[in-house]
Length: 223
Image 1 (spheres, rainbow, N blue to C red):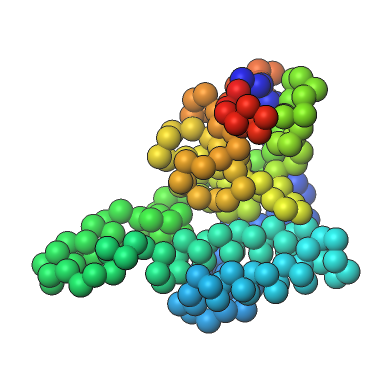
Image 2 (cartoon, helix red, strand yellow):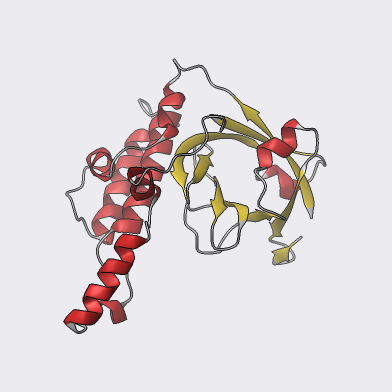
């Protein structure tokens, strides 16, 4: 178990990164990747590969802001692309069963955009950026240290990402904890997770580090 200090950081409203509090509508994501509405998973992945060559910070004309926006838009479109459900769901059920499933999906918002449309909001006190540092100099912890920028709301909580090849810091409804992972998806797959559901940056501000279980590639286990 490692202890990471997550300290909130306010960004000036004039900076480009401050505009990434939300990615925007689904159509905004489609426009940014250059795909049509209802694009397949394969089309979304191909568009991401092409756009990544243009927006990567190491490429002339690229920027950290656009690359983070690109990655978050890509993750969002993957979650909504046709065909992401299992083949069993694609089989034609009875009209009554299908109506029940549709009603159930409408009653329970699946994305923050839908929840926000229903009137939910995150706190304005949520920081625009979070700086993650370790209380110990270890190679394991150094993978997660750095600045995480606010990019979107996920599971009704703020989500953050590093620039470059981003890692995501987000809250998991499924496990009631905070995670750092390579994808903004509540699947349980992650590189680190907290022992508890308290927001990491409040612990950092108060002077107490947040305890994280971190994946050790040498042991092939969390430590």
